[in-house]
Length: 182
Image 1 (cartoon, rainbow, N blue to C red):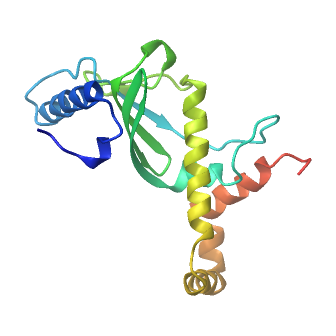
Image 2 (cartoon, one colour):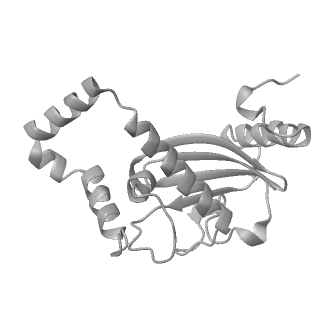
């Protein structure tokens, strides 16, 4: 029996579908099949998010969306997918999902193209990303004093490099995105 702790929270049906999806994706990558069928791949490119009015998003959302790396196996009753995040690129390997809720980000393997410039994703996915950003923020708060001292030392020794970094630019976007009432 296939065992993988990353999928222990999946239902048995979702684990079975995940096995099938992973086999299809592997065969596609090895050029054994020409199409991935129902197990679509979607790519989202995360640009800067400006000021958000009336919405509670974490203060590090731009840094999370543009600079972090993450992997997750995600499930809900009617949805399951593999979430891979590399910098500003999010790859979603769908195992089971409602196609009508995800528009404009599908990878079209035959033409090598990605959907539209303005993809549509369901609202719960935005909440999922916000929660992931909150978790990263919590982890950053747990950095040891020794590690924080090393970071501060690097910043003071390399101010130009830090000011020109993508991380610093994302942090500035986060500061600009904070509602003026804060």
